[in-house]
Image 1 (tube, rainbow, N blue to C red):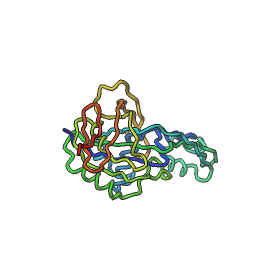
Image 2 (cartoon, one colour; image 1 turned 90 degrees about the vertical axis):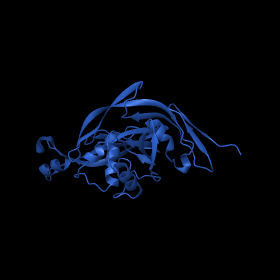
Image 3 (cartoon, one colour; image 1 turned 120 degrees about the vertical axis):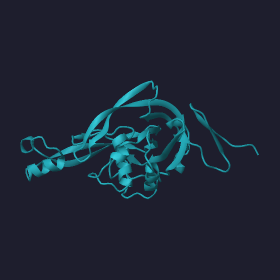
Image 4 (spheres, rainbow, N blue to C red; image 1 turned 90 degrees about the horizontal axis):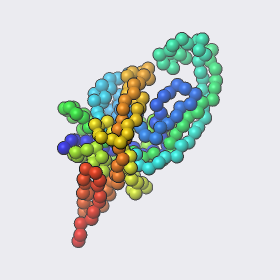
Length: 252
């Protein structure tokens, strides 16, 4: 059995992008590793310049509950002429190099409506009290938490809890869904675990330098699942197997 920390991410809008600094900032349909590690760091009170190496040892799986609707917004932003900033390491540096010689363009910002995810965290080594500290931080975060961008506030408590399970898909049956999404079911899970998955995805979300926004690619297993978290009502009993989990009420 493995010790897992599971929690829920729910928002009215989410922005799970891969690349930034372009005229179009797209949003994928689930949060990548960098987004979740950044959220955990914010909960722990870490700033972007702080050390995230302890959090980077965490493994994770994300269950996607239902499809989301895309939404596009338009922003006017300042851009730096290429001649004014040669190979900048970051946008702030480019703005400093250009000084007042800037252009204005319209950019596209993509969002996903009503996203809902279950997240499972675990470690493959002795991490001391890391999971316990993360759990407490999610209950009392050091900074305001949001799903991707600051405009994407969370719509429900994260409800973190510690569980023991053999596989992450079993652990994710223990998450607590918001009251208005109690009937949601996940049919897809993205996992760091070594699983004989039917397919894999490459995601550019392994942070190399958070201050300069440099990321590397990683391979993620895409696993078909059927996850319907059990409601804690009365004396309900949840029975789990490695493939699926169903809720049953004991007979009177």
